[in-house]
Amino acid sequence: MQFDLTSLPPETTANEVAVGDVLQAKGGRGDTALWVVAAIRGNSVHLLGVSRDGDIVSTASYGMHALRDRAVVGRCNDLEAMQLCVAARPCL
Image 1 (cartoon, rainbow, N blue to C red):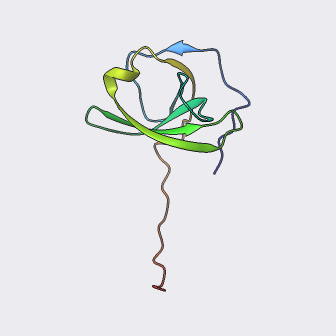
Image 2: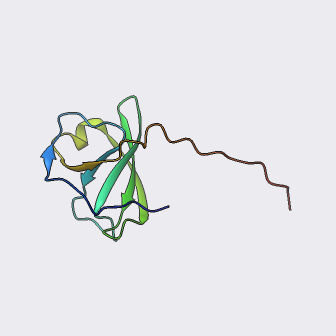
């Protein structure tokens, strides 16, 4: 799976984050340049870390309060509706 980052709009700032928001990462280690909000449960926000090439390179969870006022650089409109099918696989 890879994210297409070729048409990111200018940055804005969000007061609340939503599933599908793409946020600017703040430093840290590794190749994570952007965070994609994958899920929100209560006050916990679950993120996919994405490199500048669009590859998923990390994951993280933060409290909602930690992500307020973070730069929003884009949106994955179809992420919330995405459904992945998990098929049973035979035991080895």
